[in-house]
Image (cartoon, rainbow, N blue to C red; front, side, top):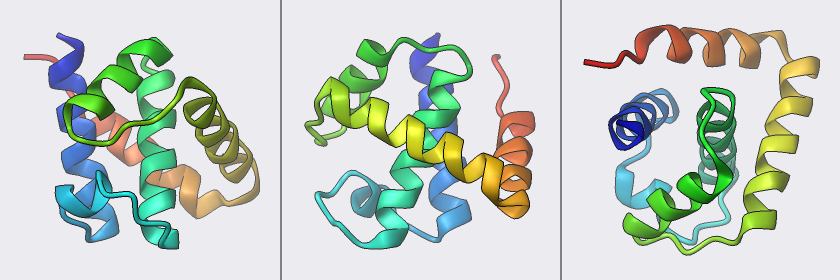
Length: 101
C-alpha cells in the first residue's frame, strides 16, 4: 500500500521539478534534485510513512541513503514550507493529487 503512495509521490515530484526518475534517484547534488528529494521525503513523512519505509523505497530505486539524511531533508522541507508560500502551495497540490486505489 505504501509503495503505491511512494510511487505516486515520485511521479508528481519528478513532473513538478521536470526531472526524470533516474535524476531523482541519482547521487546528483544539483539544487533541483536535492530539493525534489527533500520534498519527496516530506510528503511521505507527513502521509504518515515511517522513515525506515522511505529509506527502503529509496534503496529499492537505487538511491542508498541513511536515516539521518532523510530526517535532515524533512527538516529542510519543513523550514521551506514556513518560509515560502509558493513551495507550500506546490506541496499541498501534490498531496491532493495522490490517492489510494
